[in-house]
Length: 446
Image (cartoon, rainbow, N blue to C red; front, side):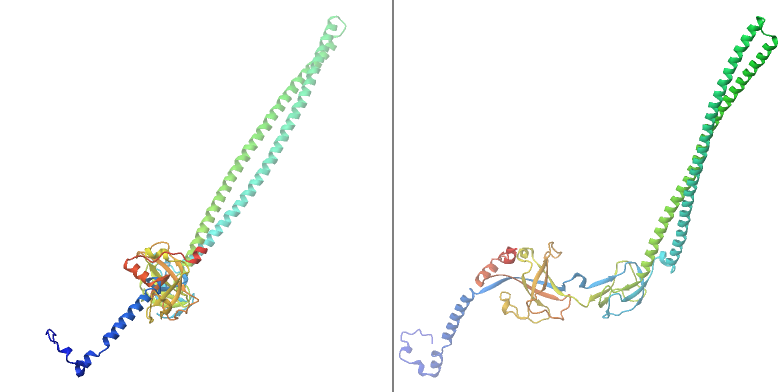
């Protein structure tokens, strides 16, 4: 009915008497629905004032807390060729267990007795060094003997000089005596000649005095010759001193030159021995590197270079190993705008991939399947993905993390911040504002 007549029948007829009219007019669903909407509005208004924990959600990966317990690859320090494998993928190895054996690919190390031959060279060079040392000692003894002999010769020559000086002094005295005797004889001859001229002395006496005068003159001349000869002896002795000094200086200098040559050869041989010893140690160490061993206890993950006869360069990864004992951690990445809100020691909730969870970001207490963590490190430099890396460790006061979590699996992290009303959080989200900046109480106390 369109109910457009001037005389409606609803005023004259009671529609509730009819079954259909009663069914339509007596329905109460609209009233219930209105009450439901009113109650829902009241509930929604109340919920706007409920507390909401601001948070920062991000993705991360499971890793290990200690750096030495993280998955790693084993490399070879030298280039080589794979000869034999001693393990299979999935095997457990202990520290020091041999994983594979390699061989040399450089022609300089093909000789299998290279270390032994180098050791023989060391022995030979060491013998040569010892011979030079003995020669050095012999030359030093020779120099001491020459210097001692030089001192004795010089002392002997100086004694001769002293003897010559004393002889010159003696001859000088004898010469003066002879000259005095000659003057006395001359005066005697002059007096007796005068007496002869006066007739007081005979010619015989004059001749005797004359002979005596001539003898004294001859003695004076002879004594003068002796004096000159003694002076020549002094000169000869001094020349002998110079000759001895020059001769032994030349001998000692030559011996010292041989000594310095022997010392130089000793040092040169010592340097060669040291170089050979270093080479021998390098060869010995290189031989030990032909066997690749496990750096720690763990499981062999994957053979990166497989097969037999494959060649590789130094530093190339050969096989991956995962430590069997490790402490789990999670590394997550936050945006630069959220970095000031992250502090050391703050609480974080973690949801691991593969573990069922019901997560309410703003109500961590009612979330299910999440595990507690805390911030232990914040990277100071931005990563390649444009975010900052944050390292999380398990929270000892919360539920322990599952033991069967594997390193490298994914994780969803929720960093818990300040508590605010829900209406404030909705207003912040609508305006794309960052979470409220704050400093934790522990930080302010510090």
